[in-house]
Image (cartoon, rainbow, N blue to C red; front, top):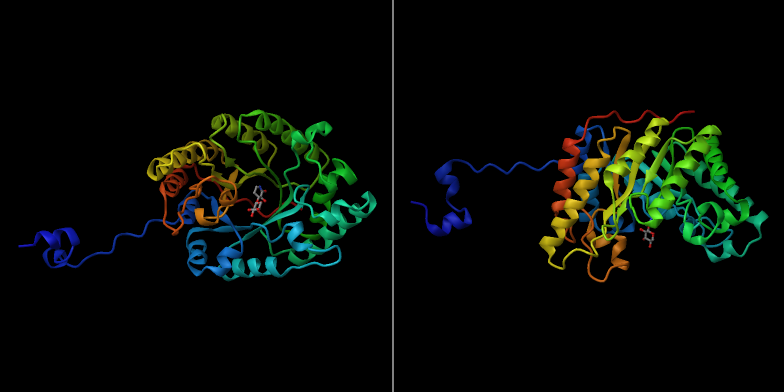
Length: 362
Ligand code: XIL
């Protein structure tokens, strides 16, 4: 007879029921995504290089990586005359070692420009723009899956006509900086897919509503001008504190698909600030929001990947922004899968199949 204690602990069960079988390992997020022809990944930074368990989580769960800060201008260019590629090289090394394609985020962004750049006259800023693209893209040409060539071109709150985000590149060149960047990158890197990456479009608050048509208009103009644009990156830092209409967002994505572009979900996480303190309730609410979003957008076959902004809550950028430890990502502080991970797996499994995009157009 099996004792009560053995029933609770499992001891003795093997004798009674034959050899114990290991529980089946749940499919990784990458494997679930692969079933639908999707890539799944996360942004990655120094944390994964320093923390072996976190590195293992990337190796197991992802099929694509994105640099978090390592390729940003302010990290590469601590001073006007110095390039420091060591961090970006280390991230690329990790990606190569683990056999994951890497997205390069981001070459040109008007935000987070170093003070030394802001102080320079326009003509000098233009020279640095061209030189920066030349140096960085030449170093990594042929080694990256994609580049976020330009990040966040619009920010109507800056008050510029046309809703453009202000910053040194825009101040020196006006809106033409975007097409110039795409053409210069394409001239050097013949294989990396070229993305225009934007924030806020998934929201139905005033910013989302104003940025969506601005981005669509820019994409139309770039394509009509023959600029080498392959994909639109939509960050998708979901913010359930604001109204959202994810089926309408999916319809918006279809507009890019109709122009022959893919759409990448590039920075997915779910802001949990309006959800309860209770962890289980909060995790359920985050998962439900993520599921509604993914079920809507993955119905569009032009969506080629879903990338989280980091993998575990411990390293989310919301750490710096939240009043309590955030629970915005598929894995918790101890790298355990959360309800959001299950919701994502289910959404990947339900997504209509698609083919991974061909290498970029020449
Ligand atoms: C974030 C980084 O992850 C943080 O470490 C940094 O402090 C701020 O920037 N949209 C983007 C990303 O395009 O580059 C930002 O990354 C998050 C919002």
